Image 1 (spheres, rainbow, N blue to C red):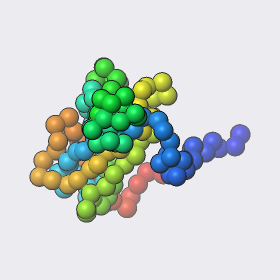
Image 2: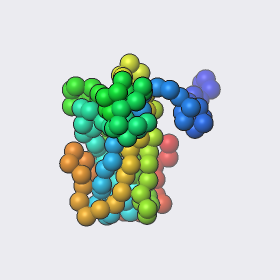
Image 3: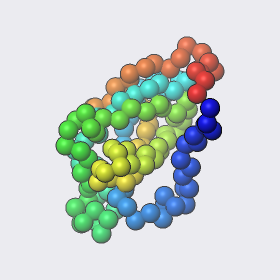
Image 4: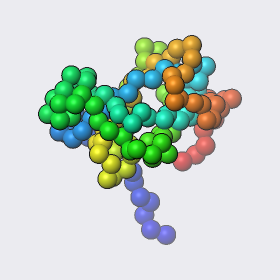
Length: 137
C-alpha cells in the first residue's frame, strides 16, 4: 500500500490576495436544517455578484458587477454540508466551485437561517439524528 494522499492545503491569506475572479451568493436556509449540519444543493444562478465590488463594477469583473457561472444547470449545482451552527450566519468560501477550467476562481456563499429556503436551495440529506455520530472519513 502506498501513502495516503492528503487533501490540498489552502492558505487563507493567499486566497484573500488572489486577483482571480471572486463571486458572492447569499442564501437562506430553514433553521431546522442547521441543527447538526444538513447537506444541501444550491442551483447557483447563471450570474453571481462580484465579491470584490459588490456589483458596482471593477477590473476583476470587467466592470460588469457580476461573473458568469456555467450555462448548464447541472454544471452549476453545488452540494455542500451546512455548518452545525448558523447563529449570526456564516460564509463558506469554495475554491474553483465549478471545476478547474470554469471562469470563477472563488465563490463566497453567505448563509443565514430563516423561515424558508431561498429559491434554488434544497435539502438533500437531513442532519443525522445523532449529530455526534459521523461516518469516518
